[in-house]
Length: 474
Image 1 (cartoon, one colour):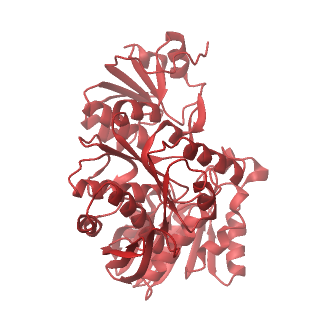
Image 2 (spheres, helix red, strand yellow):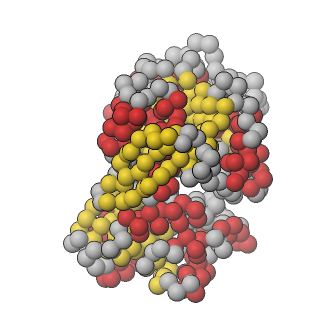
Image 3 (tube, one colour):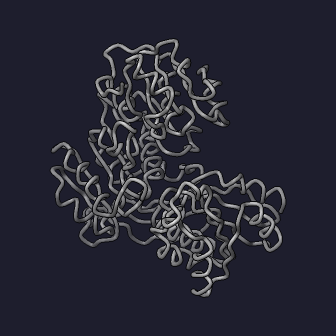
């Protein structure tokens, strides 16, 4: 019989089993737990590289498939992944055996954040890059931060660090926690400092509308300790509204004349983006970074505001920004072949696609921008953004749209139409083409790509390894 009585973490834990261990977050947690000295096992429906290789190299035993016998060793605690349903065979065995269980954020908070200052980065967009920037700034400052980020930090070669310092950087995800906890993940953390980058409607599979999303962020803000600090982007009207409700100290950052942290005089000169920052109307510093686009510089500004509050000097912040190598799958150049550049990006929400295309177009202003998009998320496979996507590609020269994968999981009346998007783009004067599968896109691009082109590929998934396949065939 299902019970929530065992949704707890025992006082003494030696062995931990993770159901759905191969996810990005779960794999990172498994690595942290192993490094912390716990006996760690895990299971997943498809045990696949690179995560399977990474975990095996750490000496973590992984079971293929979900079966009751995977729990025969009776672990002290089970961490249940976000994608795991209550009908999972191991979940049923977990209840039958009355083994204590918890979610990923519960485990992360208990074993690695408690006792440290939680630096929580929230918002619809920019969480991963901002978290990664902040973690790297603190590392360069010698503060040895712990962190868990939703992408691989190139400077570290991983997306987590236990850290021996006083601070832990974590993405505050608004997505639901687990089948037994439908609240957002970020409610499990108590920030000493937090960043709120943006609030828009997203995750249409769990949120009804923008008001529903706002309620979750309101709950997060309401729970902020009075002594905490919350930095919010001044260019987002919803962020501005919600920060007025904060019980703690708040600081706006952005382009507003009255904001304590203000971005000024940004310009691009490949391979650098340079910008100036003022703090309360006075010059704070001039910085440069390999990141491109105004939205990325605003992410850097948010990290600067928090780092300054932690006492990191401006010259140390400057050195960190200059040496920050970025996050895999965020404007990552996968290769250059015959003078054709292939770039990978995680953009999927209409705002992210628009900002990414604009940033790449501005930075590579003398090149043709070929935008390739796969609508793959639970939201982008639904028609909720059907009318929003066409304007996201205004700065692209050529657009390729793939048929959304796994459409059979979406009710017919709710499905997004890539063919309609292609027609809408053509109606806006864009050269746009629809493709039923990835191979058709590759065949087309290999035929039309020219020297000096930038092929910008956007998807939150692997996209059938399209990046490497294009580079191989060019």
